[in-house]
Amino acid sequence: MTKSKIWSGRFSQQTASLMEEFSSSIGFDQKLFDADIAVNKAWANALTGVGVYTQEEAARVCSTLDNIKSDFYAGKLHFKNTDEDIHSANERWLTERLGDTGAKIHTGRSRNDQVVTDLRIYLRSGIDDLTDSVKSLQTILVDLAQKHVKTVFPGQTHLRQAQPVSFAFYVLSLFFQLQRDRERLSAARNRMNKMPLGSGAIAGAAFDINRIKLAEELGFDAPTENSYDATSDRDFVLELLYICAQIMLHLSRTAEDLIIWSSEAFRFIDIHEKFATGSSMMPQKKNPDSLELIRGKSARVIGNHVSGMTLMKGIPTAYVRDLQEDKEPVFDSLEQTIMSLKILKGVCETFTVNAQNMKNAVDPSLYATDLADYLVGKGLPFRKAHSVVGSIVAHAEKNKVSLKDLSLESYQDFSPLFDNDVYTLFDPYESIHKRNISGGTGPESVQNQLLIAKSII
Ligand code: ARG
Image (cartoon, rainbow, N blue to C red; front, side, top):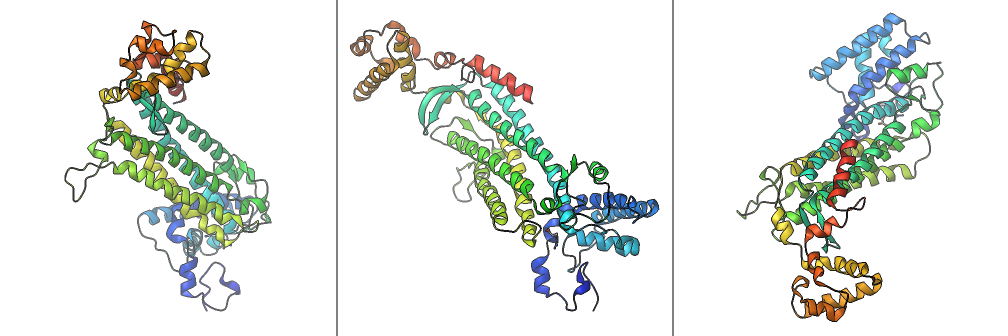
């Protein structure tokens, strides 16, 4: 029998082809190809330090790996059924080209430490791409907010009109949500940036490799501290899965806001045709599918996080083959989240804001809090003021008159503290100007938030 696999020495029977198919990860872990080439090159250099390779041999391994890389991208290399994963395929190609010199590459190494080293390298650059996508959405949000410091609309709580706020204030709320995501990404990247190589299968390699130098060569801050942990650990995968889910939650809620505000009932914004689609049946339709898909994809990315955690829940410490299932969810979450960020950026760059519709939608009842605050300003305790204004609202509703049109006499029937100046309250700009407290919707406060946002970018 030909020993066709990197591990088949002790086997006398061929693997069932069904098992080969079931066990293979090459369909998805080929994404790790570049990282695996880099890891192999660095490992070949490290093996010169322990007498496994001469400098010349290591140089030949490195140049052969470079050739494998260009041939791979030129489409000249093909996987075999016996290549379980990208690590086996690279070792086979190297050995086919270099004979025994290639056959030495796995000295002191296991795929258990190799796969997590590759994965950390891959996800580290995934985090960088994700961070760039978050940042460029934030940049668009700042541009958008700058234009709308004085655009007012009825802010809603419970999806019911609450208080007048500026559109810039809303837009910046997403900016700061995304800023927390960036902080999470940067912390996760720091934690991820340790190198497992040298851990072997569980116990550490029996060759005295200079791991500090090796870590440096691969762009890691340091080697991992404990090999048992390093080959077992997928915290860095779970953490990224969580962050992707968290970003998607932010995007999904925003998508929901924009879907509602672009609907016929609101018409606060118009989604650009570039990011809308039509109906195959109803000719009049322009649907917000870009936003609906962001909302829909958030379900899938949350599911990936749950898959990752469920995968880890009951397995023993150290490597088990279950861990191969870590890759597809995290690759998918990374791709879908980056794509969703880019789509939302496109939507926000192109929608038009109907400032007049927004302003017209502010119902006079939204000044009820300002009315209560007015009475507080005249010395009435807030709870009593709340109750007085509550009665006024009920009276106005019953008589089908707006708070703005209620006569001064009627106001004074409820409290002698009311005066003619009460009518100055019914202006959305008046209302937001009162809220220049830090963090508030007042224009000065929002300008200040813009300064903070700009300094972050
Ligand atoms: N393809 C495997 C994975 O992704 C690589 C590690 C295999 N190790 C092993 N001992 N079978 O987890």
